[in-house]
Image: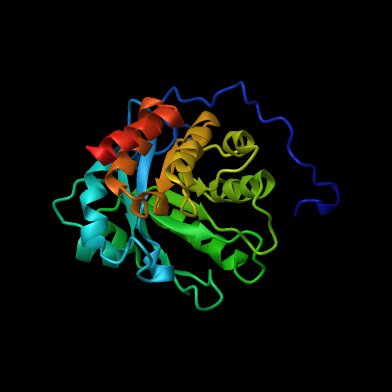
Length: 291
């Protein structure tokens, strides 16, 4: 094991040296097989190299939270404007039309809710991802939570085993552990653990020093939207993350809890794919909202 007496924070992230993408347009995936490359190509726009994922998996922890009372009414109409949909098998099957052609990032871990100690998760059966034609499988890790860190890292490792067997990429989702702060050191650690265990994509939170988190994670990083922000602030969040090298966003509450969700997801897409500034994105949001 590593010598714990001499752990030093990284300080040479090679920010001016881009990762090699000569064999594939997304970093860290040069050597993956055809199936994984094909599936991530559905998720990440080939022109921009980025993605706008629409997350609506909150209900398996929170129940019918605001904006997710009716997935068929609140989420299904937004689907065509996202690059990828992230949800649970139950909500996708019952509320998203089977004619939908957007790639699915399937939430493949499940367990406890907000009413008890969270993160005691297990994986659903691998046949579910195959039967639902998932383009990606997602599970979380709870780095820094003494009770659940080991089991959640084991889950992500097992999910990667499954993904390698069937050529389905895995997205590691970083949860904030009880003993860790919301800073670049924590998110850099958690994101790197996902990649070290074989995740093809990492979802984490934006923070100061995020460029180091992205640089030290050798696969595409997308940011979580987190709590609901005013629309301009949410667009600034997306913009800042992209400027730091993020490969996109996986937003939920900042879209479906917006006063104009359809306008918001289009504005986020403008920032992510078309390099709009937050101000330009907010102008687009207001134009679409008032149209």
